[in-house]
Length: 302
Ligand code: RIB
Image (cartoon, rainbow, N blue to C red; front, side, top):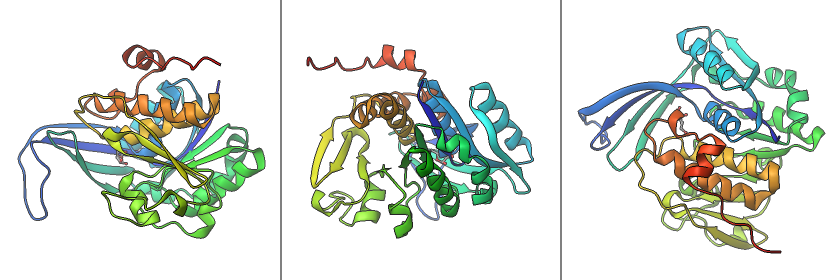
């Protein structure tokens, strides 16, 4: 069974479904509200677990109602939460609006997620060094990520960084990463270019392997000056929230099982499933459910 250590956030998601997203200074009347667990780290941990990996989660929540809900959920999913600290800050919260096309707008109050420290991560160094993959995002502090990546190096653990939400990355982060997984917007911020043609030429991409996710257009793997495209599984999207998390979890699990291409394909299938469900949690497929909904492509004859 692949083993994945996830370093990242937990947020309680407060979600309003509305016909359209509000513009600055405007109020829109929504149709419905739901509250559910989220946070890129927790979503990716649960998604990887449901896809069949052994998962440990390193993060922080407050000593409050949302923090207790996080502990209950992750433990019930079978995620190892010995690296989940309780801190004297409120649990992270995300305010989300989802429109009729499934697009979203998210504002996060990180709270306890900001209290994930290198010291907390170092306590979990054996779990990180013993895992096949370390999977992290940018909703927890960068110095904690660097501590986790250092632990990963000691064990030969592959480091995947999902650079979301978009932020500049210092040089020491680039050298700590094996695989970077920006979406188009994050790719433009990191490598230049516009959002419609985000990456510039593949020759500009150096350092870690880069896999750019493009929503309904699939993903592109940049390697050694070349770019290879992988189509998305065609679906009717109802809610894109958490699709990137499902992709990253699938990538991590598939990579640990059979290498990077298998990871991209599993990630795209998991991401397609995610957008067909309203809310994040229901969109994180169990492996058997995913195989039924979107069967794996046949293996090429050797
Ligand atoms: O990627 C989706 C997640 O982003 C949501 O669950 C929300 O909590 C924000 O972290």
